[in-house]
Structure formats: C-alpha cells, structure tokens
Length: 502
Length: 98
Image (cartoon, rainbow over all chains, first blue to last red; front, top):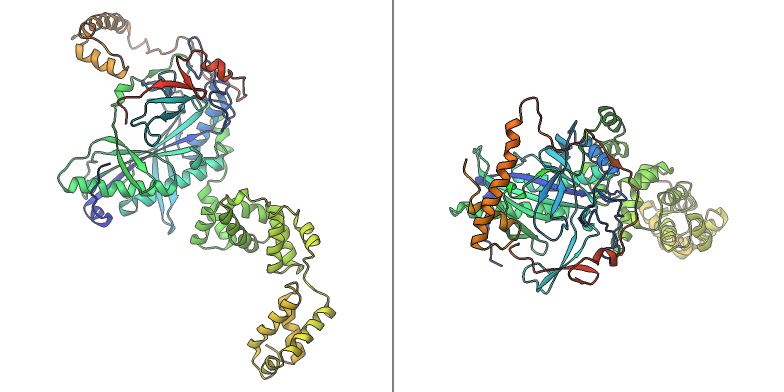
C-alpha cells in the first residue's frame, strides 16, 4: 500500500470547496426477491434461496414484486420526489460472477422517483437541504468469497466462491445531486444525510436499514474545486462505506487527499476507492468504466411500471410524520435540548421513550431510565437498547411504582435488574425480592430514633442549626433499612424529632 | 457510414472477457457490421408517428404478490455448475478487477 501524503483539513478547506455526491443502496425488507418468489431470509445456508430466474437460467422470466414498487414510491414521496408516470427497467451489462445473468436489472434513464430533497439537521441544529437526483429500483448481487488471497480480498485470490441467496434482493438506490456550499461541514453533512435517510427508511417501514448488516450501504463521491470556481473537479468514488462514522471519515480523508494531489500540481484520477475502517484511509480501486460500457438497454422481459396517480396520492396520504419533524415535536414535548435529543437518537431510544410514555410514564422518568441505567446495561452487554429483555410497558410500571412512592430510585434499579435477569415483570420482582419502600411510620420512627441515638454528635449539630448535617443521619437510616425507606420522609422525621425546620 | 472497426470488436471482447485472435477480430467486425446494418434499417421506417418500442405488448404494471415460492434445493441450484466448493459456485480467479 502506498503512503498517501495529505494536507491538513484546515489547509485543504482554506483553498478548496468540496463537492459531494452520495449514493445510498437500501435493501428492502420484502419477504421475496425483486423478480422472483425466492425468500430473502438472512443467514440461510448457501444457495438455498435461488431459482431459475435469479440464477439466470435459460427460459426463466422475471415478474416484479408489487411491494418493492410500493416501497420505492413511498421512499420517493418521503424524499419529496416526483413519481414517474411511466418507467422501465433496464439491463446493466457487466461480466462479473456476482450476477449469474451477466447483467443487473436496474433502471437507467427512467427512474421511478426523481427531483426531491431531504432536510437534515446538524448537531448544532442547523438545517441543511440535500437535493435528491433520483431513486431507482434494482436488485442486489450475490456474495463472493475469495479463496487463496492473503486477507480474503480479491487480490491474489486463487478462485472465488459464489452464494446467490442475495442475488435479486430488491434494492433502492438513492442518488443526491452534487452537494455544494457545505464547506468545512461537508463530512458532517454526509453523515447527517445518511443518518436521516436511515431514520426515514425505518419510519416508512420498508427496511430495517441496518448498516452493519449491509442493508444500507453508501458510496461517497467527492471532488474539490478552488474557492470561487464554478467548475467541479474530477471526483473519486469511495465504495461501500458502511457506517455513519465511516461516511464522515471517508469524506474527510478524501478532502485531505485531493487537496494534497491538487496542491502539488497533480491531477485526480476518476476511479473507485476502497475505504479502510482501521485507519480511515482510502486506497485506489479500479478506473471507473464509462457508463456506455454497461451497454444499458430497456429490459424486454419486464413490462413498464406506470404508477396510477390515485395510488400515488393514496400512498402520499399514508406517509408517516417525517422523522426530523417528529423529533423536533417530541423534543418540545419532552422539554429537552437539541443536544440531549441527539443523544437519545444516537442511543436508539426515541421510540422506546415514546412507547414508555404511551404506557403511562412521564417524559422525564421515561428518559431517565432509558438513557441512564438501561443505556449503561446495553453498553455493557454490547447490544442495542431495543434488544434488552425489558419492555416499554415494564419500564412504565417501574416509573409508576416510583411515582406512587412504593419504590425509590435505588430499589427501582434493583427491580430493573431483576426484570433484565428474567425474574419476571416488575411487580413479581418486587414481590420475590421483597423490594418495598418501608412506609410503616412505626418501623421508620424506630430506625430514626436509633440513628439519632447512635450519632449524638451529629444530632447536636443539627439541633444547633446545621440542617445540612441531616444527610448523614438519612444515610444511616437508609443503611439500616437496606435502602427500602423513602429518603425524603426519613429526612422529615429526623428534622421533626430534632425540633428544627429547613 | 463507417463500419464496425477492429478496435470496437476488441473493446467489446474485453468487456465480455472473450479472448479473440487477430483474424477473429476481422471476421467478427465484418459480421457485426452486417447485423447492425440490418437492424439500422428499422430507422428508415421510423417516423414521428412511430414511437420507439421496447415492448411489443400494450401492458403495464404486471406485478407479483410478495409471497414466498419454493426455491430450488442447493443441490439442484448447483447441479449445472462446472465446479463447486462449500455449497457455492466455484469460479476462476477474477482478473483485471480491483
């Protein structure tokens, strides 16, 4: 691997304006493939979900999946696109074993959706509009395993093994128009765009859009032009950048690399590049084939798709609230800062908190448990928050028990721990573990009297007006009751016994 | 109108990963030229009232319900493969990429 000289990010931005184009592939969550009835289950044994159509055997004919078309229209509408009145599929011909047909069925000059935009919100709240060029339907390729190379990469491999289970799974490719004017924030905009698109896809229910599972993949096109120039520079295309963090890093790296090449009088070669997670760098891939080399032509085996206007309007009416607007609404309802809302989003807690509130909890308590104790546990276990074995209803029940005074925070944590450990619903855990705030005034009074007797010096200080010292006695009572007392009530009793007021 | 050149055939052969001998390049250039010439005659009859046609049937929106149909077994799927390994299609070293 050749060492790439870079110039600093600040120096690059002082001279050049970045121009980006982002291509995102989303694997739809349909039960079957794009053009045949094969299942799309992840993790099935190799070549167990194929048929003559997706294997490209002679005589087989494709038929498009209606739900995939509906999903494409929904995505287009949510991106404020126009929906084609009539469009066709096209064959993209290339010779590579990941497609047994020797072509990918895609759309070329007649995408189903075009001319839209997506507003994305940066961390500081600034809204940036990303224009959408098109969204089109196509199909995924098979999975190659390269054997004999040093690192499982294609380079140096002796031969390759193909599993066609993924070949033919519906994909929607969403392409932005050139993104200009983002300046130094270009990498941040790229990340925010992919993040917002992912939220949108999830809200539409057309895909889980899990990047780590390859259900959503991003190519980052980037070029630089000198400030004041109108003419875009030559771009590089960094392929398969598959996490939000990587999208930002890849854009940043390419800005620094392009600037170094251009500043030293060199020229950028139009090529694909590979992104490396380890150090955030990119390395040269292949020189981009010209579009005409794909010899696109209309797919004769599939009839045109002509979405009826009434159907499109029906789908438009059924669209969910856009995620960014929903987050802003929730942020106001919950009374949290933009920064806190971002953390909630990053933690994957938005829907969980909403469900907990719907189950009766107040916003502050719901947020506290999901973002505190439960986030900590999810982190420790290395799982998503939503994957924890506790439901929103159960968290709401814990909140209710705290609100009515049956539990204090410390006990509530133990209840949650019990639920996570599979000991049952919150009330069962309370019962089994004997976790109840001691509200018996007699028992509490005895504990308070004992604490005062055992800490005479502190009691004297409090009598003398040092109310702040009461904390030590509260602590002693809590310890004596193994945390099962209501601390506020204990404090009241102590002050009452010692004849002082706050 | 210039015919199909040797270079164009060589380019197509590269895209198709076909290895052609020098005399084959000439041979196919001639043949392809005849084929394209024949197809090009269609343009002679095209007029403003004859729109380009990609499909002979006046159909649109032929769609399938999203319902799983039986797939082939892996054995059936691989039965025509010249080579296989680990229940996968085995293909020769992929050259000229990356």
